[in-house]
Length: 362
Image (tube, rainbow, N blue to C red; front, side):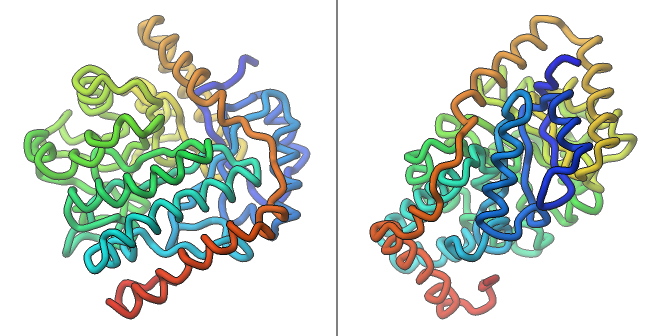
């Protein structure tokens, strides 16, 4: 079987099963994404990442390490405040917040790199909206697009120094959604013009910092007859590729989420046809990955050969520097400079809680 360059998979537990190891060797996906179910301790995660790396193709290792409630790696690593806690601090002390956001981004990248994790599905570029479903909430860097741009950029400047790949999410903007896309499809009654005045601003402003963007399973009722952004040729191809000239990889959110309908094979096919370069399948079930592979095959048979090859070149070229070898996480944890930076960042959680107790998620 040819390497499945469009596929990012998940695994079931804290160690590779024989079936998973055989699957990785045969299929050779572009990446493996880790979740809380895959992590029990530093020694274990190091062993797991080494085992994945020894499979044929040495895939990139992915994770969601946003801070706050979406943080797969916790003790004994840094306890990161949520992005919105930094936004609260920035309203009170913008200079200090900018410095600490830079430090938090740097710390996050340092920890991931030391573990051999090359890709982080962060930062969130959605705008926090009053009255919306709390699925975004404190994951946002602010309640106005200017706040999100300023705060996320400060975090990114620190993070990018470490050589780990960031992925901005969730394009075209999930903050106003009234429904959690993990459960059902959110629909916004907005035109592209209206989105361009608000939700699209962080993505457009930060394209140059982001080698990857993740789609939202969210529909705009006035765009592509209200199909989810993950399946929208208008949003992914016309806007991102043609109008904005975006040259990074476009990554789907997890295909198994409740917002999408149909089989996993159909979901994968529609995402590739719309313009996704990489597909996330996060169930950990090998049969689900097989269904996604079938969907990719169906899509590529009906697409222009030049477009498919351009997508594959993007994936190969962009992911290549992020196939990392684990370093010494124990050495990093003992480093005095690291420990000082960590103490500064962790203090933000308590300070933000004092400003607005309703915003603490830690």
